[in-house]
Length: 358
Ligand code: SF4
Image (cartoon, rainbow, N blue to C red; front, side, top):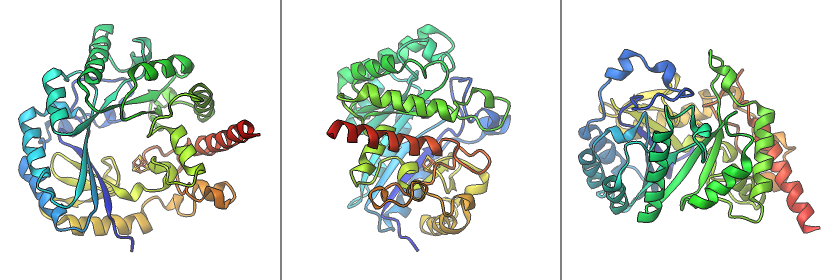
């Protein structure tokens, strides 16, 4: 069985709780009274996680604080978190906090900077119209933009994560100029809006539209900086015979687990009862990870078993780093509906770079 050396832990200290009410939020369906009342993460639970990590032979741990909105927890909580993390002698670790940016301010930015935390801001573009699924008014959008500019001024390491949807998908040149202006030190990425089969499904970005968007993004970014984490960077990395950073391109989904405020752990980067592993308060991380790895090899995603970008592209040895099977977070009829777009992007980047060489 595979032994994990690198582990990404997505921690959701306030579960689904959030101070915004984005129209396209994927956790909205789960927004019941129950989840709102669920307890937030206790420092003792995080301490148990840290103690268990010390018992494992991990080389690298990446902690990502996610939501809901993780800034609903006060700085005093994160102060205790960072003190516990600093006891991980001999294990490299990084910390990222993914936020909607509305509760950020200078004090918090400086606090995260001092503690070596990278901040990921979610924002869908340079205009309010790009962000109208997200913010109730222009003022809130501008306040977040100001916070991002302040992060830049203060030298905070940050990235931007966008969602591509009908409000921004045709404004590729504008989005690229905006990213150039912000110049996020930790890069940016744009994921397609996908809302499954529920009543909001009509808002999901169509696969063909996402492919077109990626091609336009490639054409616009040619000659400019290509940021780590982006789909284009992943395509170029794999074509240059290196492991792409995006898990659904590289097939490294098994390196991710998640934990909610109660200490429940799941075998993917998000909470899903069918991927439940157990609770960190009552079971050791070592036991939970054993179950996690067996699940990934046997049970999880049976529909993906023999699937990979590499195989789908004819098992060409030059494409061997594309072992991704698509993402289990976006499943439609047992498939990642954008799987075709990843292949089309790789083919496009390959063709365009061959043209440039000749
Ligand atoms: S569920 Fe998707 S995004 Fe999450 S780790 Fe797996 S492939 Fe990556």
